[in-house]
Amino acid sequence: MTLLCLENISVEFTTRDGCVEPLNCIGFDLDDGEILGLVGETGSGKSVTAQAIMGLLPFLDGRVSQGRILFKDVDLLSLSESEYQQIRGNRISLISQNPMTSLDPVYRVGNQIVEGLRLHLNISRSDAAKRAKAVMTSLGIANSEKVFSQYPHQLSGGLKQRIVIAMGLCADPELLIADEPTTALDVTVQAQIIELFKKTTRDRHVGLIMITHDLGVIAHLCDKVVVMYAGTVVERGDVATVFKNPRHPYTLSLLGCIPTFGMAQKTLNAIPGNVPSVRTFPSGCRYHPRCFHAKPVCVKHSPETIRTSKGTLVKCHMFSPDWRKDSEKVG
Amino acid sequence: MWQFVIRRLLLMIPIFFVLSVIIFSLIHIVPGNPIDNLIGPGMTKAHEQKLIEKYHLDKPLPVQYAIWLANLFKGDLGTSIIEKRPVTELLRHHLPYSLSLGLTAIALSFVLGVSMGILSAAAKDTWIDHMAMVVALFGVTIPAFWLGLILILIFAVWLNLLPVSGSGTLVSLILPAVTVGLGGAGLIARITRVSMLEVASKDFIVMLHAKGLGKKAILLKHILRNALIPVITILGLRIGWVLGGTVTVEIVFARPGLGQMLITGLFRRDYPVIQGSMLLLAMGIVLGTFLADVLYAFTDPRVRDQHQ
Image (cartoon, rainbow over all chains, first blue to last red; front, side, top):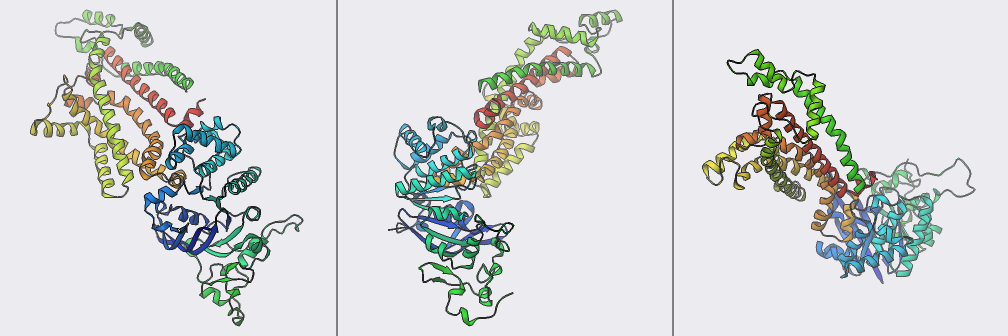
């Protein structure tokens, strides 16, 4: 059954210098218990997508300007703030990008987990504490009794991340959104945390959206992948197919950027140019300034999303029937 | 935590000595002496010499200091040269007036200032915020003695609700406490507001929303507690200041507080009185800072750990 479905979501932020649109008509869906990887460079709109689903945009001076977000057939955008509060941290949980800054520094970490639990489940303080400690233990925190009554600054990054994950898992959500949960951690801890995600989501049959720019993580963990670029979804489909048959030039280049063992030294592949900033998104296809295949049509028109023969979806003019007619190249 | 408190207490001992030296030498550097105020017509040089010897004023300064300090440890701050009464007795008489005014004013500053700050931060950029901040600005900038006079005019003279001056009853404490407290309230309101807005922009606040917490709970439980940390520092400094810094208000409301005692002593160069009251006021500031440090560590676990 479909757990979450984003349809044509655009997001606007009001800033001091006017309006910006970090997300433009994106869409994807996710089934119960499925793991979806959201991948893209910094600034591609991954975190904004998470904030949109969580309904956090109003607190960040942003809003969803069009589209629908269906969670189990309920349109989240039609909910009032108090109805949304019933869902946040309860049925949908967010695990934040930076565990270092996502805990309140003046409260004990245990109490911060308990706070969330008691908000959504009708249980006593001591029961909530018991449950929190149990979840902490299941996340591989050895001395959960001690950690429970410590303050965030007394914990290592790995432990803090586990606390943040525990906070996300505690109330048994149906959907978990993990926004680059491992970027702040060192590599050995990263692997542990990823394993942890795999185990807990599979065991509890929780849907997971894993936001990352690590393609290795996606390949290892996810069922589906959504590739984002400059606020658009350029390609999506199941992980094996997309990784085996990448169609969008951006996906291709992204996969080409992974260094492999035995690769000729000195040649580390990089995509030329930078991700455009949200204020200077290019016209037409937003990838065209960096694309090797770009033609005039790419500059003028935004491409349609097209279904490929392998069943993946790709947003690129190259796969439209008109592509061959237009032979002139840009640059 | 206790270790931290004890260490901070011990640190007050050297501070006390340094203070006593500074206070003592400063007063004796100032030109003039109390004997000039005692000499009346018909007094001879011999009389004057006798008086000088009586108060040890002929001895070198270090010796005078040693005598004063030795007596201090016996609980004797000397005798007022002009009024001929023990300084400890004078302090006992004047301190309650300052203490009651100071503590009421501080409490008022805190409650009023923090509430105004919360209101302002919660309604940021609305007319409520602007109004509160204008009021706060007035509080900070209006000189207390002038505000005191205006309040007397309105509430005592025109409305006839409160006494013009005096110090016997609780009612008579209201106007001076409001006068002194408003300044502090303005300062605290502005600091609370800025501090709350800063905390509100932190990452963990978004995460609290993500947990499903309501706005009110986030504001009062999380933002406020974090934002109070700098407010406490200011409060601690104000405690000391309010005890001695209210002279003008004491004069306006005719309250015989420490400030009045000090000023009178200064005009007459009444050394023991000046030394005694200044030392008490200075220790008030030290104590206020100490209290702030303890409260600070109590509110912020990070500070607590730094001291272990």
